[in-house]
Length: 319
Image (cartoon, rainbow, N blue to C red; front, top):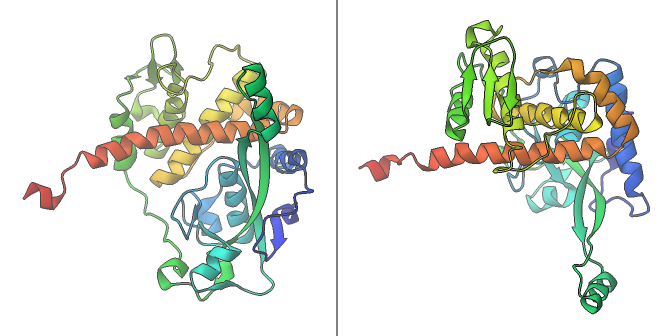
């Protein structure tokens, strides 16, 4: 269903007549089909696709996309063979002195938010209540920089894939910076909510360093759910939709973090595949919710990395 994300070159948002429900369903249907075919959208064959590993971002603002847009743009990159994760709107390309090549078709992403209608605000004032916000979802079209011409040289040049690192020092530093209690031993990986610690098998038991860090980052995704952090409810039984959703959040947060840290994302819990399929088939908004929560979790964890970097004195300060 490749055409689902392609729109003619345009500088405006997609027609408002397209309902919020249809977008939820379109994205969910594609992901369900891929999962049924054994393709996990957030774990892509990066080496085979030739694309640089990383999170998609705006070439104009350098801001990373988040939530469901990460999955949509990763899909576009791998399906269409782009070598870079940099994107622009039609107008952004023009503002940078370039333009979208004639005939190119863009990729549809979405923007979700909430607003309070004037009538609802007035009603709340009259009745002395808190106003209720109304969710909205808007479509926008973006283009990979490879679909553009005349852009500045530093934007046109695709980012080269980062070389593999034996011990992934950035990932190791991030995990250490969180201060999370990690206990190695045993044969299972899990997060213990009651005692607030992560259990990981001995590092030597993992097939590779990447395998170890993907697992550790998955459990850190659960760790962010603690009431003192992002406060997600973890008190659900195995087999419930809420349990499957939390596993999906941790799986996506691990994938987002791995991509950011230069580690090829891996499937950590393939045994949940049937539960995820059931969840998505019954709730077309579930993947949007999970991806949004995963972005919040990964942003929460990456903030520790930035705090650690800020604490390191520069050469000038050291002098």
